[in-house]
Each structure stands twice: as structure tokens, then as C-alpha cells.
Image (cartoon, rainbow, N blue to C red; front, side):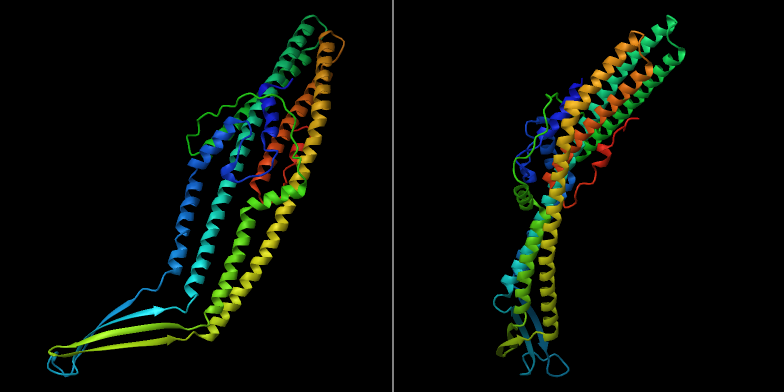
Length: 433
């Protein structure tokens, strides 16, 4: 039978949301309190999230900066009539103060602010991508931890089988029925399983360190893995188009592409407005000592460079066209990635049923039969070896299949653009030999 930890790995498949994807700050572990607490702690403590959040806060100030009125200018002027200082004696000697203010053409400031705010909004999607990626990484490491511990339990059970076979070989050898070669072969297989057990424990330690690194805590902090009942993998009842639409809603890349279109559309409007002139008003006062003061006021028009503005408009329109194409490209890639994962998940569910209802029970019976026959002196050790090795491979593949299912569901929730490519090692039989 599969161990408690192995059953827990099976439960991971159902522990993923059958209702579909959701935002990273709304991720739920669906009945797994350990995973839920890990995700919550990671989102609160991970340095990458803290950095992305700080950058978002920094970007939020761009709109205020871009839409602010240009600062005024002030000047001090001294104009002397003659060689020696003559303020108050010569009417043309002036000590003057001046001030000026640039006034952009109406609408330019608002458009600049809107462009900057749209740029700043892209930082929010970077933060959301960091959140989704972190949640998926925590889940992947968690499933890897469950898998390693489950495989270690399976190896321990296999070791018990070989210890039983080893004792039978010893009894058969002592009674003159068996050979010394049978005893040695049983010892070799028991040692092989011990090495496999150690390998899985090392993998579990590595996964534990990975989880703790994502949570920003010491590498040796243990993660409890409570037992769970054996449950079948849950299929999402929604049609594929509905899942695709849900994924599009949370995809940071697609949302960023849509925001880029808004940004570039405003940039085109701003580039067209740049054909309009800006203005400047000035004023000043001049002091002539005992003579009456003087004052002046004026205004100027700052005409744009048409060649520069035309080039800027062409650039803005080209960027808008690129953003529209980028949106379509991201949508196509996202749909392909989601549909590929759905196909993979559906295949895993069918393969899992074959293992659960066929290969694993049949393998258990084959091992029990071969072991009993060998103990009764009517069978060969080779039959026991073949049956036990086949069962170990099937159990190993089965647990890896379940872990792959859980990981692919996590990647579906992550809304990544890259399709799945990692099924082949899971579906390959004989991975323990």
C-alpha cells in the first residue's frame, strides 16, 4: 500500500482550485493549511516582492512630476552707464529684477500626466507578475517536498520487502535449498533501495531549503506535512474557453499590453498637441537709485520644430501599432499555453486512473504472490526481483505524475506564457532502475 505521505501527494492534485485561476493576493490552498500559510508568509516577507512593491510606489509619483507646471524663473540684472558704478547718478544705470513663467499649450500638461501615469501603471503588472511567480514557486517547491518525502516512504517500504526476501534467502540457504548468490542479490537490492531512500531525503532537504529561501527565513526551518486522505485528481468543470478568459483576466503580460496601448494612444495625442506653440510671460522692475524706477512686461511664443515634432509623432504612431500587435501576440501565446496545459492535465488524469485502478493493485498482488511463492520454495528470486522492481517503478512514476499534475495546475494559476514541456520524464517508465 502507499504510505501516508504518498496519499498526501495524491491529495495535492485536489488541493488545487477547481474553480480556476485567481489573483496572487487571493490565492487559496483549498483545504491545505500548511500551503496556505506558506504562501501568505512568502507574500509578506519575500524580498523580491518588497522590491517590486517599492518600485510600484516610486512609479506612482511619475504622473505628478510629468503633469506639474514648469517652475518660474527669476533673474537679477545690473546695467551700468559709464566705467565707474553710477547707480542713482546716471539715468541709464539700472539694477533690475525679472521673473518669467512658461505656459504650455492647453492640454499638454494633462496628456503628459496621463502618459506618465500609464507608464507608472505598468509597474503594478510587474508586481503582480512577481506575486504570481512567487506563489507558483512556493507551490512547486511544496509539491516537490511532498514528492520527495513520498518517494522516500516508498523506498522505505521497498526496503522492508527486500529485508523479507533476504531473510527468506538466508533460510533457504541454511536449509540447502537456496544458493549464496540469492542472499547476495537480496543484499544488493536492499542496499540499492537504501541509496534511493537517501537520495530522496536529500531532495527533500533541498526542497525545504528552497521553500525557506522563498519565505526569507533560515534554511533549516522545518515545514510540517500533515497527512491527507487519498483523493482522486479533480477536473475543472468549466469549458476551455472559460478557463482561457479567466487566465486572460489575471495575466500581467496581457494586462500590461493593454495598458501599453492606452499609454501609446495618449502619447500619439500628445505628439499631435506638440505642434501647438508654448508661451512665456515675463516681467521686471528696474531701480535707478534716486531716479524713478522702471518696469517692463512682455510675452513670447515658443514655436516647435516641425521636423522634430513630425518625427516624434511618427515614433508614437509606430509604438502604438507595435503595442496593438504585442497585445495580439500575447493573447495567442497565452491561449496556446493554457490549452496545452489543459491537454496535459487531462492526459495525466487518465493515466493516473490507469495506475490507481490497474498497475498499482496488480503490482501489489504480483509482489505478494512472488514473495509467498518464493518463501514456500516453489518460485525463483528473479520473479520477486522483477515484480518488486516493477512495482517500485510504478509507484515512483505515479507519485511523480501526481506531483506534475499539481505543478501544472500551479503554472496554470500563474498564467505564464510558456506552454508545458516537462511531461516526458514523468511518463517514462523505469525511472528508478
